[in-house]
Length: 516
Image 1 (cartoon, helix red, strand yellow):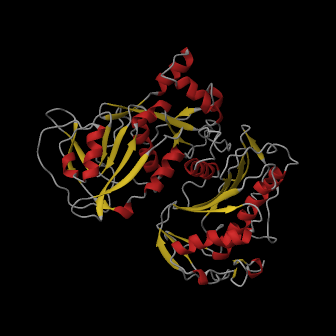
Image 2: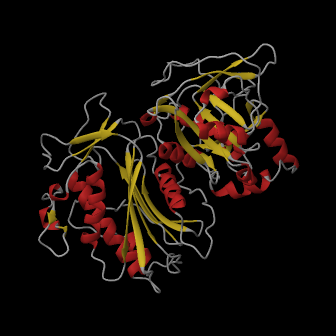
Image 3: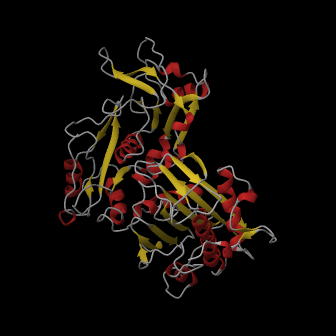
């Protein structure tokens, strides 16, 4: 594959560059076979190897084998346009591993759809010169988190591939071990081309980078920079590439310009789907440069579709709620990025502090806040030791941020004309580079950073609540959401701090927060 580097944006007709750096430099082929450039994948068990003739499985036959859990039937199958295998787990802690994952999945979507399996190992067979499954390795389910993979694909592929199915399949002999599959439905390819987008590169050259990959036979081949340039220069089309590039004009801009990925349109008769809400939260993390660090997000949205007609008026309730979000105390842990309000494509307003937090509100009623989950915000006062991969959650920062966000949700949606009846609020944790989360019910000393809590393996996790907007009390609804979080850490309701349990109903008690 030829190296695709970044060109200064002033040289380019649409302010973009093509991405493929670091994946397969110097090679025309860009494959995803048994890795040989890193340590063996963890969690693998002894693989079974049998001999037999090659077989080209249909996607229906692959689905049937997965359903039967008869993974040995994959042995002797050959890779083709709709069937790809990877012997080991992707290194999703590293940017390169995330890009590799996005490349492999987008290549299926840019061809005819199909399956990507994680577990079967392939080798080039000398007789038919195709990549043939020689063994199947299984791994424990905790090593594969479907939500984490989905979030990465949402963040690194544009436009998002619809209806992706990401699953772990238990083995027949040992249900604690199995293989994983990512299925791209053939109908999803109607949205192609799907681009692998990456803006976090070690370069001083201005411009976002992207790459285009398509499966041809048993390989994921890139479209060269020369080919796409010629298509643009001569006005030729590759399917609907030109139309898609026009849609990307707002995305492929200078690094750090805080442009937003246009999200799939929402049908007027339904509210914004949870999948799209999570996608927007993931994009907000990308805008705030928080993809590769532990972070958290809060989402608020009505359960019926609304249109915030006053969003772009500085005098409207919704605009003022973003320009001056609520705060309980001076120098507290609030939702204010302390940056100017940006208008983005007539779809949303946004405030962002790169590397720290971001607040945005969409005209269709999506409210999102993202921030760091480390000592610079959610884990304030607890500093990780060098090399430590544990994210500490400061309980009063958590309580304050969740309470403030519920207050903001009620202020935004309760103050508009034709206010919705019900809203939903979500809180999510993302792993970044950590292996565990830790939460305590005890006060944290800001001077010593002492911490004693319950630790659980890190995974991307989202908690949701719904409530009636009329007469809603922010501190009551905040407690409901906090209960979901504390229950995940196996705490009882009585252990949750900063709560007035004598109130009817119980609620967060702001007077019990740590002093300024």
